[in-house]
Length: 249
Length: 267
Image (cartoon, rainbow over all chains, first blue to last red):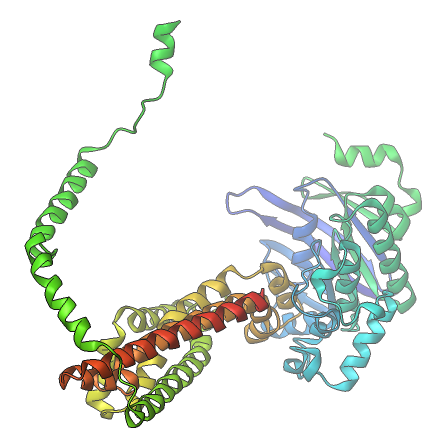
């Protein structure tokens, strides 16, 4: 199993000197599904951002998809990483007044000839077909013409997943993808998401507060506490007592 | 207990610092002095009323001479053309300038202030001054009027478009930036669709404003129906003038009605 992500002694502090990440070492292999858990402020989202070079770090080393960098990736590295990563946010980040199809086509922005991904009407036929295929995978083809602001929270999050999928990423990063949804919709989204990445062999790293999601949809659970890795265990071996230790002082 | 309450009870009015008090007194003094110098006195009003009545009497009935009405019709068309062409070009040119001037999405860093200042300059110099400049440089006629409307529209729309870009929903922008989209792609893919209703509203107000401006620009020779109005007053043809004023009234009213309907549809 080739290595997709590696961090060594990764440290990052806020401007006031308070550490967010305090020497994080993790390894993620190709095709693995990783749940990052931890209480608010544990450093989960910051770690995700460091992995894709979205935020600079103070010391240590990160290797993502074969691009090794310290502090922050070079422009070329950042470009190469972004070409192969799909990112799903807690608040889907769809353009509300655009159609679902256009939002999925937006996933191609930043790739070669990306300007034709401004709107589905000017996109190449091949991209439009890929977008419909991505929508089929999240079971939303019937909504292709609907405006994004007509969707429910769960549907919107599935469109965001389709937008990430159309990029045919090697790595999917998701920052609390189910946090803004009700429990049923959240579980539904996670099921679709987890199933898709497993079938396509995409590596998935997602953050969550929901232990049920972590053990159900990940192969491995990495817990962060106070900016350090608290435990790193196969999902089947995570025990209640260990989880309690992560969320309580 | 009562003593305690008295100490804790906030005063009915906020106390004012000596500096604020001095500024308030200065503003009041300026206002009072200005009234004496520029506002009409009752005697002036009384003396002016009969003259105004006389003028209105000479304006009635409005002229309906066919040759004159034909001329007014073409001038009205020209006025609409100045307003429409000037507004469309102004709106189109406002977009890139607003993008360059916007705090959140500019590709120019601190240089954005150059564009912000340029937009402010276009907005703060009155349209009649721009019209005088263009009449002096381009010559009399509707082209000077169109140029004036373009500049005036950039000043108006540039500011509102830049503010709308800055206030646009940040989450789609972050999502697209993360996927490697350029600032321009984020602008076209996420920001413009998000601010489109606000842009349509602003553009319609700009069109209304342009029509009102293009009516009076003719007074300084920049084409349109205003030029006909100036001729009518200069030659003491008050019946012609009243016809033109009525046409202007109807024109502006129709434009406001049309843009109100469009705005309601765009909501």
